[in-house]
Length: 234
Ligand SMILES: O=P(O)(O)O[C@H]1O[C@H](CO)[C@@H](O)[C@H]1O
Ligand SMILES: O=c1cc[nH]c(=O)[nH]1
Image (tube, rainbow, N blue to C red; front, side):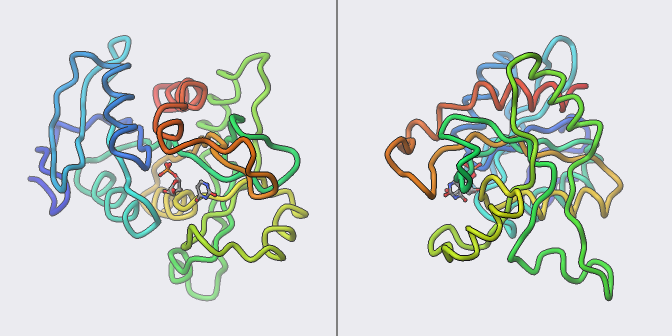
């Protein structure tokens, strides 16, 4: 039976889901990977595409922006559709001199200023971490072309990053800021399923001279997609 936000029937969503934030990125990814994919939902204009890649079932759809939006979809995908793996194919803002625009970061863990994981376990400050097998698969797929594997920070606000907080996070090895991974990792843990976020650095908080345009953010995802697909279908 469909959910309030996904019109697909149970069985029409694959066990592995690629979940970019942007519906148009999802459409592009689906068209590239699965020319014969079926659109199984269009609730709120958010296309959900299911097909096969090398004989392996795959679904691609968007999370929307921010943890509340991702949280709705991730809960429904895990609880109703029995999804086993969700891999976010995102963009993120660089916040450390270690990364530059165009780099890809495999998000090992996600600090957050959000309350999304605060009430999971009373008395515990939850650690939002990626699923190791998915990290390993993404890193293996990177081959000799090194990829960053490090924590990111998932924030509730796109605008108004406090500079001293960004500096302190960077000093603690955090490479990039985005808006979904911490909730994704927490919800996957809750259901005993697997999750990973692989993000392309689309802009840099320390130097905006190379920042992607909106169109580039929609289109420049090939390396992140290669790693995310390897993790999703491993
Ligand atoms: O490009 P996506 O995957 O949406 O990711 C990033 O871009 C959005 C903000 O512009 C947020 O969703 C953030 O996490
Ligand atoms: O959340 C985000 C995503 C991309 N770039 C940013 O600066 N922040």
